[in-house]
Image (tube, rainbow, N blue to C red; front, side, top):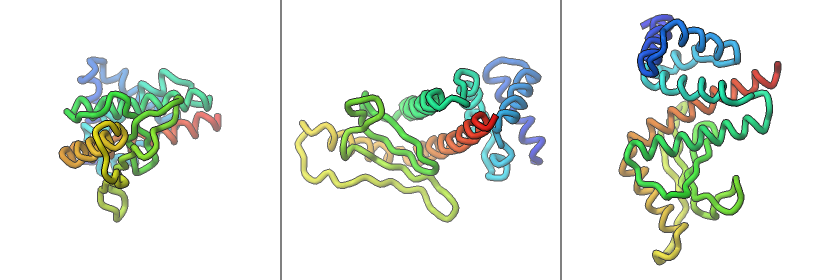
Length: 196
């Protein structure tokens, strides 16, 4: 499949999924490209059509809802992407704490319990998922909880989150890779918006 065929297939699938005409979606994609979306890299990375369609949907929604030239709006938009990642894991059947949050940092995602304050996490609650990148295999990292009783919610949920990630490895790596792709594209969109 050529890049042009791939792009048209993604646009076609996207338009069918949200029941909007092909020409409207094609226009939206062109607008995203003008805003700084470099989705030709998606093709060269071998991103499948379904994944590209999901990424495009999230990026289009975020770029329409928020002014990505404004730093405070960028933060809110990124938080919505993080929340979307948690929702996607739950939709795939993972059991996660009610107050779990995510933070995407390039090729890794941290799952952690939300703490006091809007952007803080509870100490030692992180489970880090590393997506495949260059010569690096997908990995998981979480510090030792040592011995603990069930009253220690941080250690309890960190252990359960790690178990859920391992039990659903292929699903988690697929979703994490998708959201890391979205993150990089989001950064491009923010950078381009700030330059204008």
